[in-house]
Amino acid sequence: MYSKNKLNITSFPKRWMFFNPKKISNTNYFYKITKKIGVVFFCDTNNSHNFHNAVKPYISWCKKKRIKFIVPYSIFCASNFRAFGILVDLNSHKEKNNLKVSKLKNRFFIISKIHNIKEAYKAKKIIDIVFISPVFQTFSFPDKKPLSRYSFISLCFFFKEKIVFALGGVNEKNFSFIKNDNLHGFGGISNFRKSDE
Image (cartoon, rainbow, N blue to C red; front, side):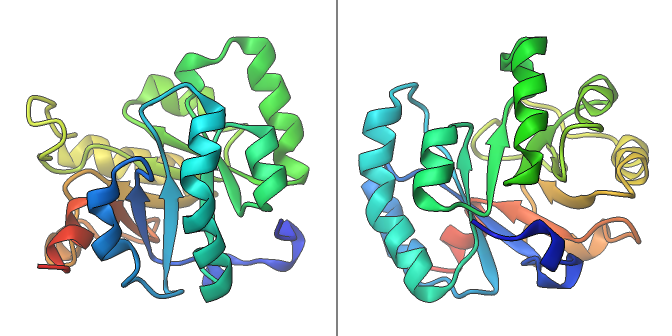
């Protein structure tokens, strides 16, 4: 677990790799990252026991390499692995659970993905770090329309007191087109896969 009081924005990686530990094919590019890149673990299953077992070797490696990592909403996983932060889906939690999340802010960084202004208002008082998505067209969700330039810039400004990252189709090249004073970096999947090719 990290001390929030001792960290400032310069200590945050500017790039975050979203990684599903259940997909073994992803291993090749995972083990090539350095501590300049953070890892956001996610899984498409609700079975926390299976996720815990699947993610364990990757977290051990992150700790060995001093790589910051974020786990999905699970107090057990976050505490057990001494995670940097917890990724929450505010749309899947009832109001009472959001209050529970806010109480965790003293122990962990609270992170969420935001897709529109409605979600932004819901998240602002709870989260520390935000991934605004989708910025560009993605392979994972080809039918999902990217945010307009105006909407993206507006959301970055809305979260100017938080730590803001772009997500969704972002890579080293196109990141230069969306840079602004309130944007710290970006997260993704395909960008890291391509670097392995």
